[in-house]
Image (cartoon, rainbow, N blue to C red):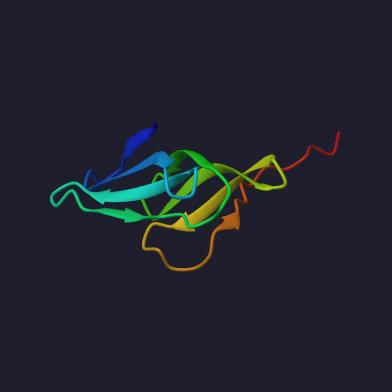
Length: 94
């Protein structure tokens, strides 16, 4: 299980086994209340969440593409869909 505190230290995100679906999913917790909210809802496994430095989004690894792992991103506010992360990596022209 991976657990990571948000930059503002008000929330943490964790991956863990979902026995109902036999997958790993992410849950978001409020530190003061401790109430978990399921953050991912996919039949694939979601692992290793990392907060964006500003705390506005979370990036994680998932095998949603037929067993091939990619990085996905979603707003920490739950707004929007899970999308393949754009990491700003650029190839050199050399």
